[in-house]
Length: 415
Image (tube, rainbow, N blue to C red; front, side, top):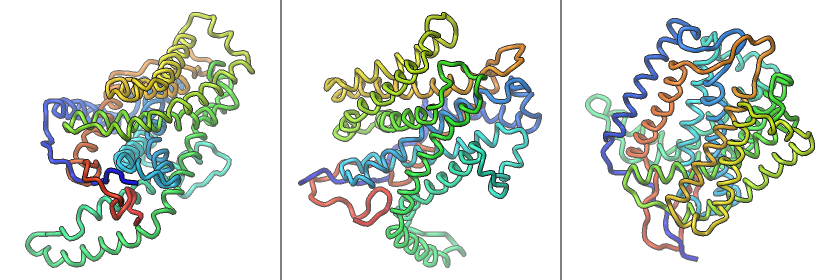
């Protein structure tokens, strides 16, 4: 059966645009507050205290960041484990988004912990009874796996093109040989890292929910449930494909490329069943525990929960069931953005809104510095993504009709 070839290439487009300049300013603003955090401590920049030991940086930068980077393992499972070759065009961008996402998640943890210079302790001080240890060690290993999975893209970019100047020219041949050795080795072993990545992701996605189960009565009953690990995993799986569509359509518009609707529409058709499963478990848990009674109270928790379910699950679920939505880039983008918003709000609700410390005397709201650092992280992630796709073969451009896929799959496995 013929299909369109996948030809990942560096995109020829200028880096700086008015939008990029705005992102640079936002990133610099975040860096200023980031330096203030390191030089003067958490208290100088954040509204965190002994009552509220975590806030926006954990809720968004870490918990939501891990969930929204789920496109990496969901597309890897779809394209490589299930051998759906037609989706290879979106796997490299999803891999890049996941790699950058987890990098900033790790940096978010680094910034948030009080003694940031001890972040290496979990590597040698193991505690098998700790859910937080499991999350930390899985994230570190999975981030390493993502960089290994990105190596074939790096070798593809530089094999036969190493041209160091001056005295360094003597290293051209050895460097090229190393690149070719890595490429050959990875083509034979990449399946190990792909499977490891999928397994590791399911582990720490669910364990983030375990952290809030431990919080017990400190959490509002609308979110506190023994099945929270399962709900965290299901929501992460549900947001994987919408995040890929969201990122792909934004990149296409920014780089003035034609959206790959033949792939994105197929991805979109898989989202409704995933959202349906998540919604069924969410509502079923509420019915069993009878926590729906709290929706009758008009307060912050009930309003935030209603917004999360209505706009983050129910409305996009209905949209993804419509063939018109699946064929329209604006409508497909809107539906995907709603799912992304829903999972983002779910993590904020679980880690910030639902959490009430015992004996608290005041409420928590993030400071301008906290918001600046978080928004700055997002800006830096977008800038890094743009730089990489302009210089490395990540995004696929349509090629001629062919009966054979390219020599290497997206992860570098020889075909």
